[in-house]
Image 1: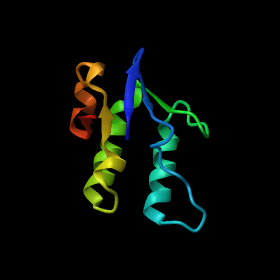
Image 2: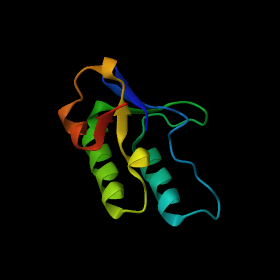
Image 3: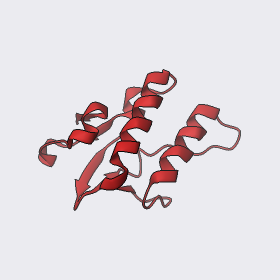
Length: 98
């Protein structure tokens, strides 16, 4: 998931956030609701926002879904642009560079 950090707020690109699909996969729908539940803002057709105080929970959640094997790395890892600079320690285990 493409991500960036501005003013201690993590933004996940609107095209990369999971979708809720009625009658869809239980894992994917659970992933959607889990990520949405800790987001500061999660509006349709907008980037989702996560304040720094939930980054530990976000990292644990992403790692849990990654380790489940049901979702791919592109769906569960944060991809930062090289221009971002250093990836915060709390997010390093679930992040990579674009």
